[in-house]
Image (cartoon, rainbow, N blue to C red):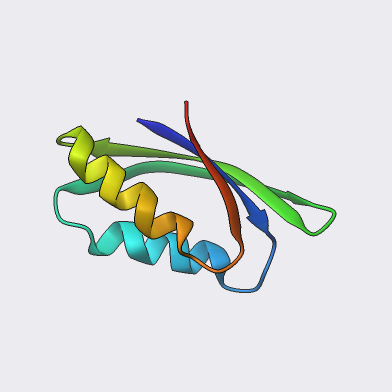
Length: 74
């Protein structure tokens, strides 16, 4: 599953996002691609998830990261 994440380009925000994913059981990060410009970042995260309920929990946690503005499932 690919998630597009958009947010403020703050120090450590990418680390916060990847740390949340790595702590989740049965969710594996396959790739991450982040671009930054004009104080905003946007990136695609590719993750392997067992079921949609785990995905929804992950998206909820990622939305709570300070600076994350939007998460879209592609």
